[in-house]
Length: 72
Image (cartoon, rainbow, N blue to C red):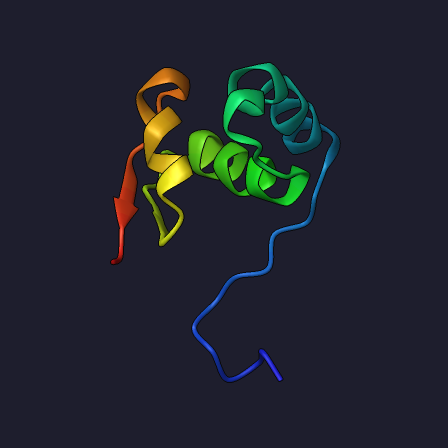
């Protein structure tokens, strides 16, 4: 189902899992899930901005050093 979409599937390796785990303390105040933290960790690792409709991500963007673009 995802094959025709312009997306890249990235394996959750040990490095990415470690980065996501380290984000727990920085994101606990806004209640981000493990999946949310993996997305943010990938963005940090790759130097990519994150596009989301979740305003909670934007509230901690500066704290964790990621560029969050709100889509609505």
